[in-house]
Length: 242
Image (cartoon, rainbow, N blue to C red; front, side, top):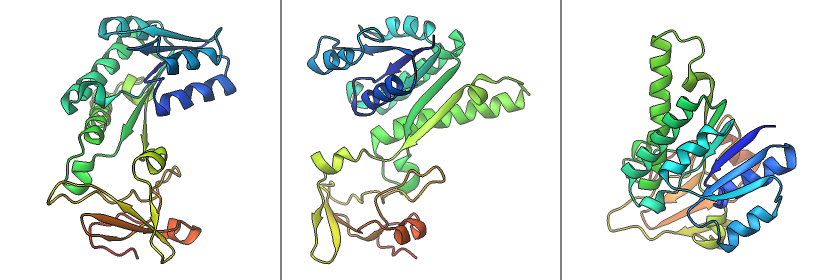
């Protein structure tokens, strides 16, 4: 029976990953948590007590858990360390431990590099993107070494997602603008320009819509439809989609 370790399993994404695994596989699942006695963690374990195990974990214990897993899904919590370098180092530590253990499949949950795309740092995006860049670098190294079964090449996947839709409900609720669109009010620091929404990706992951206007304080988007989804591209502040 396959055993899966879900790092970040009590979070917004990880909990859905666990539910999907329970519904589509017979895998057993271990979820490391700083607070396994919390109400949310208890509810998660109750989904399938015979298959889901919540355990208290620190860095040393996490390496042991990785050694017991066939597959690992890792979505680290930037806000647990509050450091871009700290999350980057955590990601590299997880990867190194999984490589040593010969984990069959390691999935790194990443985000786009805001500083590379816009010139404006977003630490909790950039730290995850830096780990994805490290994975690419290691794949290049494996290619140079002509490895026939490079671990980073053949056993590591990167899942790059957009911001969670739940943010539109809880933190960035859009408001109708009276012109058939929605307006997002952002609280940037003085002189800061927010990054543009992501353009469609080949794998179907995409932003909500192409931006019409970005003035540093307000982002206005049109309601998504098939036409805007097919024509959307990355746009900088002040740009108009083609």
